[in-house]
Image 1 (cartoon, rainbow, N blue to C red):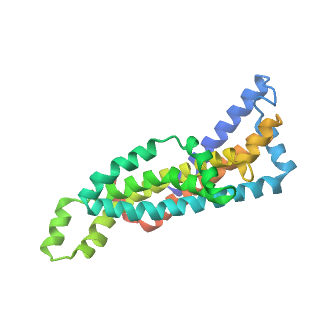
Image 2: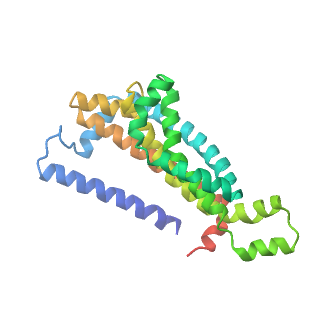
Image 3: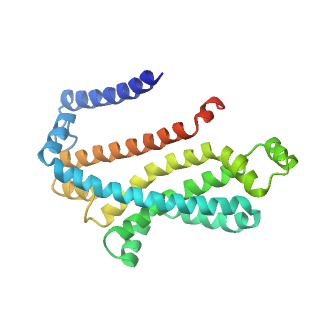
Length: 251
């Protein structure tokens, strides 16, 4: 099963790369318009230390903002699940804030927080906060009523009911929110870097396109894809290790 789970995604990626390569070669597509996979690889080999260094900056911004959003989403999600009044008062506010285009916030954060990491990490946290909040709140309120009634009949207190039942049943939903949010975190980091082109892969893309160096821009995009896929499957692996029972109780 593990071999199949590894082989099929790998085959899918190889198929996409081969189709891309065939399209650029057979279609005679110019390099500056759409480079082929070998041209992108050559662009990476020309400055690997620079590209990997910028990828490290983007990774730091992504993980820092994601960690802040996770902590805030867990804390506020628990509070909203525990209080119907707080949920009804604040949830519309969070929905409205989430509806604001994040691209419009990037220059404002730059104005408020200055240059460097703070505005970028803040934008990442804003990007991935709402999916985590919603997953936590929804998960904590989705415990089966039969389990809650059983806990009440056994005289379990609120703390025991929360930890043993509500949080237990919420974990698959929480991890779904985390997996959704981690890709948004990478997008948020790139948006912030494009608005504030100092360091990071977003800066590489901005400068490369300005210089018509499309292969270098695509090399940065490929690195972003690698970061996103690695972080997503990293969270999925943690979920698999911590929640082996979830696969057995789902369809």
